[in-house]
Amino acid sequence: MTARILVVDDVETNLRLLEARLTAEYFDVITAQDGATALELCARAQCDIVLLDVVMPGLDGFEVCRRLKADPKTHHIPVIIITALDHPSDRVRGLEAGADDFLTKPVADVALLARVRSLARLKMLGDELRLRAQTTRDIGMSDALADAIADTGDGGRVLLVDDRESSYERIRAALSGCQTVEVETEPHEALFRAAEEDFDVLVVSLSLEGFDALRLCAQIRSLERTRTLPVVLVADPDDNVRVIRGLDVGVNDYLMRPIDPNELIARVRTQVRRRRYTERLRNNFQISMELAVTDDLTGLHNRRYMEMHLQALFDQAAARGRTLSALVVDIDFFKGVNDRYGHDAGDEVLREFSRRLKASVRGIDLAVRLGGEEFVVIMPETDAAVARLVAERIRAKVAAKPFSLGLGRGAIDVTVSVGVATYLSGGDDGAALLKRADVALYRAKSDGRNRVVADAA
Ligand code: GH3
Ligand code: MG
Image (cartoon, rainbow, N blue to C red; front, side, top):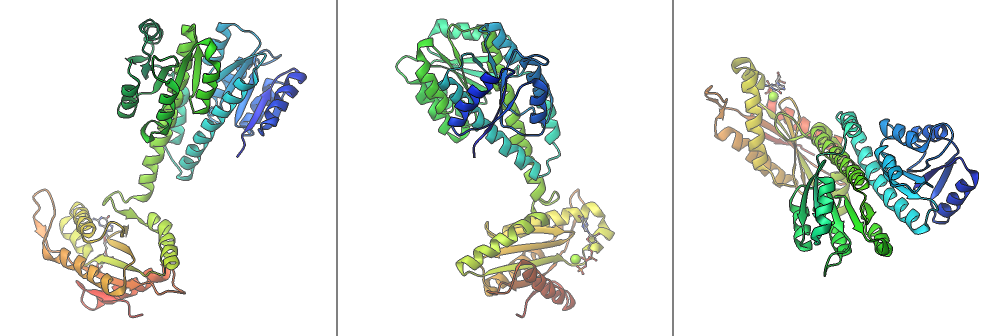
């Protein structure tokens, strides 16, 4: 998938120049000649990255950037500010407006493409996470965005990998006002610590003695634990070629020596904010996924999860020419437990039953609480005879030992009835299988309960 870049400049020739260079690299390019148009295009989700000129009539680049970053709809779009004014204070203004990066006119091809590529990669990762969060109807989503917008990027934990004392002392001094900085002079140790500890950003000196800093960066990118950890390079001005290679291996940002403390602060802040934003999305996604597929009371899978996965299990069984069985398990006279001992006691019985159920099935079996006191077990690669045995094992495990009601309320005898059905190749589907198991369960109930009945088919 190619990224779509919005180029914003009031001077037509500048627009065409950048458009031509980006199009030649197969980026999709759209243009705007003023800030208001740019904001509108972004709000309509028309682009992946914005290249923004600073000096424009009306809204200038800083203001456009500030507005993009303040709006939850456009907050996540990476912005590169392009300026002709080679003043360090201007770069810092851009970064403080929330820009993800800046380039100075005339824009060098390599720098332009390296930056655009690395931001495009990051944007796509972020998009994927946001999409997944939306798919699971994540309720915490808007909180994550609000937090991200309010986040100043201060108070992060920085691991500084640098073996020259004069250099790391300068960097530490610049950052220590707003971040917690730990220095690591040993690159191997740095990799280990990055994986084991909880850092927000890695700042790496490109000129390490006797070790290729780019190797460290590549290792950071390849380890599962550190893949998404932001890396900022600090380079000497004559090291441009290696900086470009660094961006190619996935370094997020760089600074040239002599270090401008304000620029360093702003760049690290940007990475800390970005890191926290992605982490929040990731956590939200995990929590909402778990909530979406788990039953609160018992920790078993829920009906929704079963409905999502039953078809896949069927397809797999059909493709491999294997069989598959389903059990429907229902607690006998459960209403009586609630009536006699209270709802809490009933809940405790459901929990204890779930533990016994789980202990009676294999890891690959899908144990589900359908709702109420009705449970389903889907067992891949299990024929009718084995399914019956498992059902009988569950029944016996429940009947063998009284259930504690908790809180010194004593214990009671509980029994279950089980209906069993096995997949017949051709014609059957998940709903039909469960229906047959249900009919068998009904017979187990009417035949006197505390028993297993297999579907006759
Ligand atoms: P049978 O042997 O025919 O299955 O009788 P039963 O009493 O188990 O079946 P019935 O469907 O009449 O009652 C089910 C009861 O389960 C009714 C409902 O109050 C109770 N129940 C459903 N969900 C929960 C729950 O989450 N916690 C508790 N404590 N009770 C629940
Ligand atoms: Mg029941």
